[in-house]
Image (tube, rainbow, N blue to C red; front, top):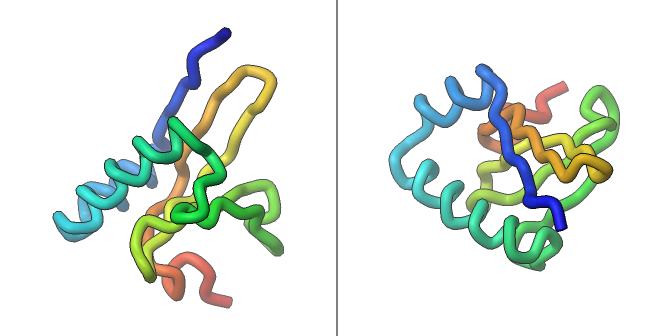
Length: 91
């Protein structure tokens, strides 16, 4: 079985670097859960709509989300954005 490959966009790295320490720790904890059980209820892993329709989101904390895309065939996950719900999904 091919191992899951995880990558991070430059934007995600910038968002992560600028996020509060508590959020960075929380993301790392959620990533561990994600790797073991992609659809764990705590993650609320779900497909997005609109401009982000090709992406999925998972909960990092009550208000923070990590936006990612996946290539199931190659078992690749790419994280693209990290931010508060209102910052990421503003109209």
